[in-house]
Amino acid sequence: MFCYQCEQTAGGKGCTKMGICTKDPDVAKMQDVLIFLLKGLGYYATKLIEDGQDIPRELGEFCTECVFATLTNVNFAPERFVEYIKKTNYYKKDLMNRASTSNAPEGADYIAPETKEEILSIPNMKNLGVMDDEELDMDIRSLRELLIYGIKGMGAYFHHAYVLGKYDAEIANFLFKALGSTLDRDLTVQDYFNLNMELGKTNFKCMELLDAANTGGFGDPEPTEMLITKKKGPFIVVSGHDLNDLGDLLEQTEGKGINIYTHGEMLPCNAYPGLKKYKHLIGNFGGAWQDQQKEFDNLPGAILMTSNCLMKPRESYKDRLFTSSIVGWPDVTHIPTVGSHKDFTPVIEKALELEGFTADEPEKRIPMGFARNAVLSNADAIVNAVKEGKIRHFFLIGGCDGARPGRNYYTEFAEKTPKDTIILTLACGKYRFNKLDLGSIGPFPRILDVGQCNDAYSAIKIALALSEAFECDVNDLPLSYIITWYEQKAVAVLLTMLYLGLKDIYLGPSLPAFITPNILQVLVDKFNLQSISTPDHDLQTILG
Ligand code: FSO
Ligand code: SF4
Image (cartoon, rainbow, N blue to C red; front, side):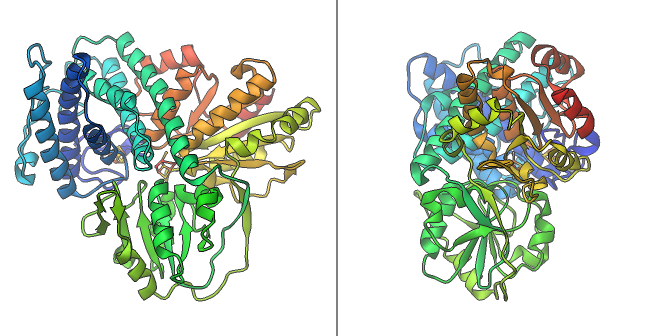
């Protein structure tokens, strides 16, 4: 196996024997085969689109689901990948029957065997795994993988949007085109650079679509004092990013005496009126994803994972862990989607069977729910506070958290920000400092939680609105981006930020292993992308 798609890759170079995330070589091989098949599928779908034919939504959704399944910490169940491979073969044969197969790039017409044993015995071939083509220029490989990881990240957002009824054929068509293009051996560095920028552009549209799906389905998040302590009684902890699943579960648990806690990236759901109207959505449990094995150990309640980040479950909670949607782990009960419905009865029964928390903890709450609507409804007050010198600078400190050392940078950075500055935060990186009491400036807490990682859209909208209010370029705002990355959604968001021309982004805790020195130099020259150093040094550079 070879995988270097996430920040925790072995030795900062690549996982070759076993993933640090515990992805094993069998699942890694199946994911490689699936992505390879999808490249050909993308190629033929694009041919048909160019010939003026429509690709059905069903295929766009299927392709999206497949790329999402290969994202870090999502699906570790080999049998689910066998099913994806079989179905991809089926769709691909149909496309090949309809499209012209002349001039197709090498590998485009590949059809995989359909049993687990046969799939695992597929010999290495050009383009199958990341490193399988030794002759490929390293900078081209770097940009090709950047594009593929961007596709995976955007696929996750697209999936969350269309399960809430928002689909956009242009986004699906770009997914097909981008996948298909990675088989083209004639593409230059510039071609790949352009495709990556197009990914950034399309992902912006995709995050906008997801924002519309979330706010259209559940209303605009509103500032909320969210409970972060335990309440007595049976409960279900819901993790991941899928608001649709949380909404369905809340409906199905209403009146059953079960408390629902969000976990990880579900935290922002406590601010959506359409979700918080359920009184049993009680608050948030625990910290970021990498703490789950410790926090779920012997937990006296049920746990539902609706998307990443899933870690290898300990035996002490495997029987009360459930997966839904895209997520999978061998021997963990999966709640299937039937039509558009999920029946969460097994999760509910498990929660009622377990003891639950036996006592109330002393209550603690933290402010959250500062998405674009909540912040921009106070735009005048913010602009005035800046003009009066009460707010000197804004920091967007956000992105994904992770397990490796070096991430206390973000806690320290937040603690050291001067009292006349505001921190906007999003994604699970916020857990590094969201419980700190950094005070407030007028009516605003100094930490404004904008939402999930996809709510980078909301943060960008806030930045663009401020630049309009101040009549300046967005890069001239007193705003700095301190970004923490872990997996491929962060890649998609970063490409969007670069596409939008945002400059001076500080990226950490380490730079991606798949970015070669030459490509890094291009990003530094063009966007002044910087790696983090120390909080003191970076604050000094930013604030002068
Ligand atoms: Fe975190 Fe995991 Fe949202 Fe990521 S829970 S690490 S960027 O999947 O998705 O921030
Ligand atoms: Fe390694 Fe990350 Fe790939 Fe898992 S996803 S195998 S940790 S690089």
